[in-house]
Length: 398
Image (cartoon, rainbow, N blue to C red; front, side, top):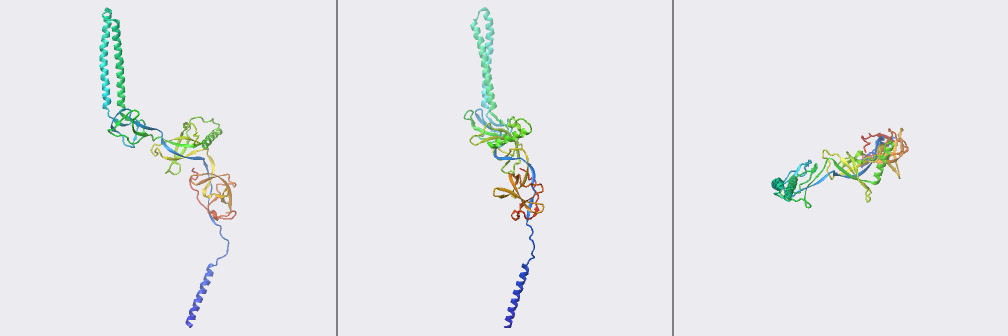
C-alpha cells in the first residue's frame, strides 16, 4: 500500500510540474504591436500615346491566277509546289510542235504569194510597153496592177498570221507574271489545256514582299483620329493635310497570334472611299515589309493604331488600384510611414500591366510610395512598414 501511495504522489507532482511549465511558456511581455509590412513602388512618369486595337488579316498585295492562253498538251512543269518564283520565270511548257507547224505553213503560203506577185509585177511592166502600141487594152493593164496590189495585201495578211502563230508559240511557254510564292500545280505533264472560257486554272502566285495588312476601323475611331491629326496640324500652324494616305507615312504596330505585344511595324497606305453603312466601319490597308518571308497570306494579326498625339502620363501598377463603390483610389505612405488615400481617375491599361492615372486629388511625386502588396493589412491614417520593390524596366511600353 505504501508503494502505491508513493506512485500516486509522484504522478501528482509530475502533473503539477507540467502545468507550471506551461504557464511560464504562455506568458509574454506586454508591449506595443509592430506596424504591418507592405510592399511599395514609386509611380512612373512617362510619355505615352493612346491607341486603339483591331483585328486584321494579312493578304497578298498581288495575287495572280495562272492560266493558259493557248490550247495544247503540257510537256513539262518547271517548278516545285510552294517555290518562290521570280517574275518571268518559266512555269509550264506546252508541246511547241503544233504551233511551229502553223508558223511554217503560214510562211510557205506567204512565199507562194510572193512568187505570184513577182509574176504579176512582170505582167504589169509588159502591159505598160504593149499599151503604147495598143496591143493590150487599158482595162487589161488596170487588172494586172490590181492583181499586184491584191498579192501585196495577201502577203501582208500572211505576215500578220505568222506573227500570231509566233505569239501562240511564245504563249506555249507559260511564265510567272509576278514574283512571289507559287501554289501547287493543278495540272501536270500530259494533260490537255484549253484556252478560252473553259480554260482551267494551272496554279496561283501570291506576292509576299511586301505583304498587305487589312483591317476595319469603326467610324467614331476614324473621326477621332482625323480630328486629332487636324488639331495637331493647327497647333503647328500647318495647313490641312490633303495628301493621299499612302504619302503621309503613318506608322502602326501589329503582332501575330504567337507574338508578345506588337513588335512589328507597318505603314498605312489605303483607306476605302466610304464607310460601310451596315457595319459602321471603313476598310484600311497597311503595307508590311516582308524580306525574310516571316509573314504569310492568311495570318491573323492584332493591330494597334495611334489615335492622338503623345502626352505625359503617370503610370502605376494595376495591382495598386482599389475601388470604393464607383471611386478608384491608391494607398500611399507618407514620410512618417502613415497610410493616406489618393483618389484617382483611370486612363488606359497598358499591355505590361501598368495603369494610367489621371488627375489624382493628392499630388503624386516621383518618390511617392504607393502600396502594391499587403493593402489588406494597411489602414488609412495608421502606420505601416514600407518595403520598396524595384520598378520594372520598360514600364512605359504600350
